[in-house]
Image (tube, rainbow, N blue to C red; front, side, top):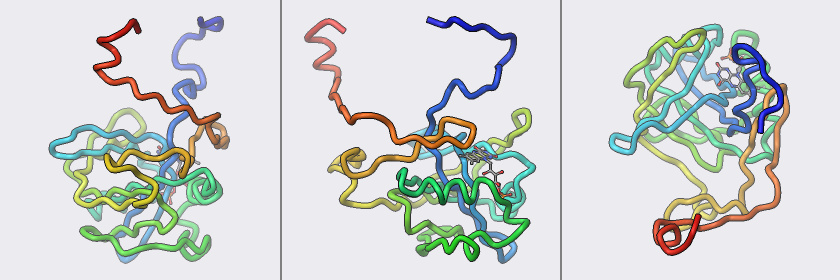
Length: 194
Ligand SMILES: Cc1cc2nc3c(=O)[nH]c(=O)nc-3n(C[C@H](O)[C@H](O)[C@H](O)COP(=O)(O)O)c2cc1C
């Protein structure tokens, strides 16, 4: 039950934890990567994924130029890499060289895929719209990379094998608690009381 009240959004960090991803892009002969915590799946058919990126970021202009981007999902062991690309700009230096970021070849787009990612989506930009101080880029997922042994037959992540990197704001990264996975399907719901 809430015990503090402010007008407006306060520090606007109450919705965390969220997965911290790394969005990669290649345009104008340059590769770049930035940390993105504001991202979301939007549609199964076609498969659409959205990322919110401020026009202040170097990546913003690169995504507009490339009309594509990739979303890379990483484990908590890679939190330093997320922080590295999330607290420096590609305008200062080439992050791939500076942080020795290993990449793999993409299948359908130009953006590099991170070797350290346990999953990644290659996205072609289908739409973008300005919401306040961020741009919402919507990409169609045209290729998917994932670590086979980290997922079950339904492509559901095995949390015993991979601990996703969660961000809770203010440069804090979290490995979330004791793993307890509960299957709560429609059958269980209809059998008992919730
Ligand atoms: C954990 C974390 C999450 C972030 N999430 C976002 C985000 O969702 N959108 C955004 O525009 N910037 C986000 N940032 C900030 C950018 O990653 C940061 O400004 C970066 O330096 C931009 O790099 P660039 O100028 O090379 O594009 C985040 C930073 C961190 C550390």
